[in-house]
Image 1 (cartoon, rainbow, N blue to C red):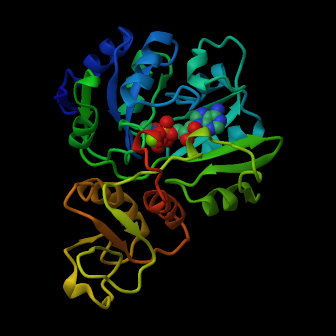
Image 2: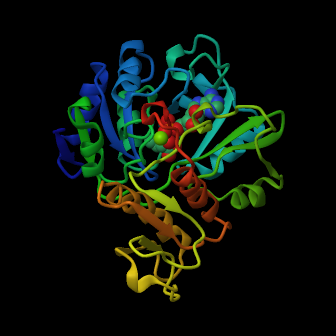
Length: 329
Ligand code: TXA
Ligand code: MG
């Protein structure tokens, strides 16, 4: 099992900083999901992240920073990127920008790309990065292809002894990963919908957020990634088939629900923020051999619904025969 320290413990932050300084792996709570952190300037430490997750090395990592100055040391933020950072950081937004040459970030973090993904998280993760004084690379703290962890227990279950320490700050308040935007010549390209609604960015920037270009692989991790639970997942259901687990959004009656194997609720009041916060815990709980089929009620595509539906579509995507082939973030 992994070692877990609550952030209320006065040694917790120090211990995390000490371990990261030694090139070890520490799971840190952020407002979105728990991250598996390593010193972003150490090749050995970053390599250990890929190994612990079973993640292919061509899938780059997000560098987490404590302040704007740290971000600017490693990435080139144009005026648009800087405005977004000033408005939405710390928070669930990752900006993909041109990387500075020889900035100290180990090349494995970018997986060979000329761009760098930067994010300033809210919560204990930011305190740790500030004290360390340099960025940490941190993907979600799950084995590749599994749902991202929103609790320390979920991290411990997924990674076990592969992580040296887990800081426990309770359930992650946002519950889905950050929104990833590529900022390119005054344009904003959405690489991954996430915890910050695209409409909020558009309203602030006075600019449309574009989808990724047709046929171009923009966020390598988005390629075939899915969050596959054991059972098959059916979306936008209007009825329940006998033996299915029902994932509810709201309290409207669903035909056939009396024959459901069980029921879980994303949000009784149909609150998308609450549904996002509950999503991965429910998917993780239902990821077990005795849950053969999962039926999910329709979720509106607005606001955080875009991120929720994106994750659900991955969970429902057809799978290859070879489960090891599947990869994700
Ligand atoms: O909320 C989050 O973003 C969490 C917490 C821990 O911060 N992190 C997270 O990291 O979700 P990860 O590694 O699970 O997902 C990062 C995604 C991947 O799809 C990766 O391909 C993409 O970001 N990415 C990283 N660097 C990139 C780059 N330079 N260009 C395009 N995509 C990039
Ligand atoms: Mg991930």
